[in-house]
Image 1 (cartoon, rainbow, N blue to C red):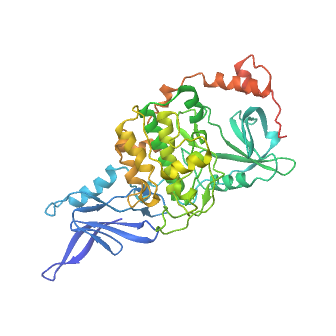
Image 2: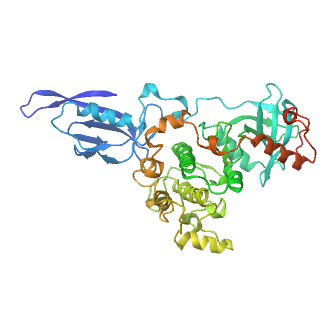
Image 3: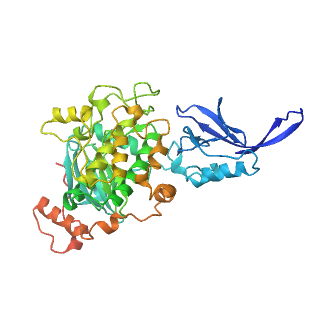
Length: 442
């Protein structure tokens, strides 16, 4: 980072103008140079006046580069010699910029961690079934070497298309709010299964069913963590396409983990919208209540589709229902494309504003996908309690309000589910760790 550059004064002599310069990539990921000085700032060839400052709203696109968005107004005094330092302080005060020597390995485009090694079935003992779906079955297993509990995603029919897509994504990325891939397991038939981090506090769907609508402060906190996870995926050109309460797991630390990335699509660089540049996705997929209008209308789509799903999710967490519910799927699609969102009185005006900003039908106008991208989301008053502390949140320095909200009997409730699923009684709760149930693949 350069702090000064030479310029020519009106009298022809050389002078030194204080400048902050960064290597950056712009909104279309083109390498360029950001310079900020007393007289204004430039991004590549684009010049802005002294009343403007470029707001860095995302980081981690590539080694040695920062990602910049568009301009945010900050009043400067051209006669003040300390203006450059104030600009730098403004950047750092937003917790949205890092110097190159402060960048963490997981901020980089390519992961610093080695791909997980493969293991065999004999390395694990089954505890019970966590869930089943079109992909196969998920079993809770104990790793024999250290007793760690993991979630093993079994590819029962050997097709493995979704698990292969999920494995490819999880081998590339690592983020505190995205479920981590611990290892892959190959069975005697040659089928490959994923061994994932086990989030032992269930998922948001479970807690919605049990507790009903969640308090707004807890919803805002969860939303902030989801935004950080989505930003990380989008920075790696991945669109998630399956955001819903069942896929937002809660870890033992009461922070969220996005799971089930089998529908994730790599290589998507466009924020979304018919006029936006970059590569888009085309596949019709996901859960009907959370699919965005552009997908329903058959248009190509980008990252903005995830923010529509986020709007549906936040509405559901606050009300206990999805915003466009209807007796038939076709009518629900029609509502998503045309109907207005109706809020119950229990939802605050601030939360309504946030949700409406996400449930904008034109993806290019949707909050999070326009020129301001992440800053528009992060600075919304709905997330006001988190806004000054995004870096602390991402690094796990802020306790989740879910810890106080959720009861501490989660293990006992889970044991009851295992008993019903496996039709045997666990008399001693500690027996859940003993591995009495053999590992069955089917």
